Length: 473
Image 1 (cartoon, rainbow, N blue to C red):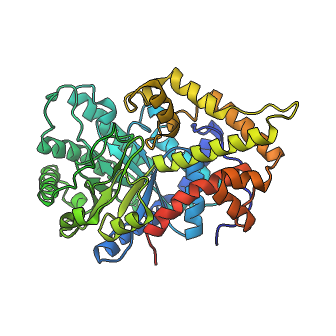
Image 2: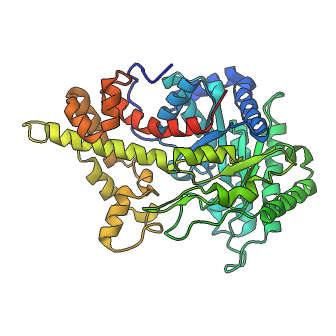
Image 3: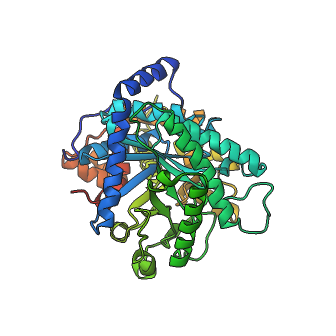
């Protein structure tokens, strides 16, 4: 299909729950698609796992974002690839209380499907997953309460049609020893307790509903990104990976989850990759070789790699070849979105800044003010003097600015930017200066020169890297 596409309608300007009427229509559409819709995607994921274990260079990238621009761009690329798209939400992003997006699992599913319908992406190719599903959002509460809420979340997620479930109970709760690592056996037992609820919820779904596919593992980065600068993380040792499998296997057996154990398709390990504010720790396959040469025989799983953002195309390809077949990506996509918007802001000021009667947008300034007014999402992650913090708020690889795009003041400025550049298309010379790769694409006729197409193509540049790494034949 290539990259040439007709202009699409402008995405909604903030992530929000669908209106009552829209939600009802989505539910009816989901019912008509029924189990076959989600079953196609689940079978595809299982096939990818099987192929990778047979030494074929097959993988899957999973988009961890609720940004509508990111999701639309990812769907456009998956449509061009004729592929399944995996979309995941974290437990603090989407949960039964709304999370920081204000969406419950069923609302998130409806939200993603509404974007699919607008893009024309087949809904049966959507694979929904839950990342870090466990006590993390309630870690400041006693473990019993936190675990109960995690079980409520997995019940809501499976009921909403989430198929890929990452069981993560690795974070200590309020009544756990504060200065000691959580016992791996405790982690496994808590994860299995959550998994039991997932299995019971699935059993209550209509006959033929696809079974949950599980990802397990304790070596997981903190949800939301890396906390600060430091040395490259150590690759998971083979004996530690096996110990995790042993403890989880025993816990699953204790809870009567033997059949679920056969559906564990991923083990989260540390391949030695990470990113900080201004640094990226690249994949070194020589360091990972002991782990990659000892893929567990049972269950029939592959490795899942978190924080793969900003890795080189060659590194991502090597990771897939080395059985890190599930690649998680999130901040890199919103980073690309922010880059495109900031570039268009510069274009707008050059084009319209000195024209009378034209109100030029102030997107970067509005974003900065929103972050300063509510620093909860970036303060624990950025360090240094104010000039350092200012730079990080705008340009950090961790991209904590992604939490602030739904702010009404930011959305008003973004709306102005899009309206201005839709009414007054910039000359190619300005695109060449500020968006050179999109300039080439416009010149070649692969994309249009409207602002929405330029933003989408900038995001798709990143998605195409992952698509190429996860070769499909």
